[in-house]
Amino acid sequence: MIRAMIVINNQGKPRLSKFYNYTPVEQQQQLIRSIYSVLCLQPENVSNFLEGSSILGPDSRLVYKLFATLYFVFVFDSSENELAMFDLIQVYVETLEKCFSNVCELDIVLNYSKMHTILDEMILGGQVVETNSEKVMQAVEEISKLEKVTAATKLISKSASLLWG
Image (cartoon, rainbow, N blue to C red; front, side, top):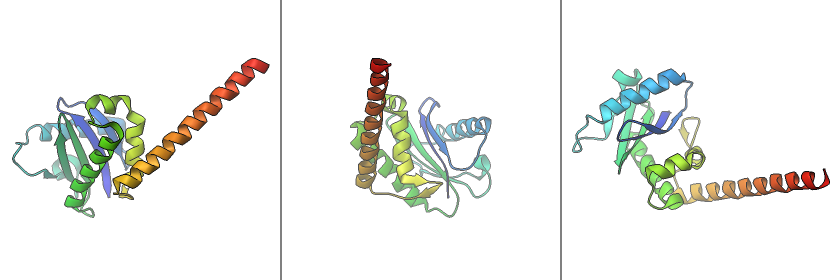
């Protein structure tokens, strides 16, 4: 099971975090700091797979990938395949690229809800449900259309209530 997905910039600031088990906020922050302290010490020419038992407890593993200034990190247990998790990072980033073209840290900060929507279309309750970026993009586009229709409906009803009081 996937325990968490975290995006951290190269200065240690978390830009996105999603925990799939209940974890108090203080503990989440401590875990993110611990993960960053391990990642920033990793040389570029070593494996992107880490045993996470010392940081995250028994039966924990960590896989990460650095894209530009952002670390994309998955924390998971032994029931998940490390290479599959590594590939999931790639699929997530490819989907972001389709959404934003040339994803940067600012895209993540300004489009926080869309980042979560994409992640939610791929992972549900710590289980991978979709790895096809095309299907994920279709779902995200449909959700965006529904959000626009809902926003327009609210705007019309608000305007009508002001008009007819």
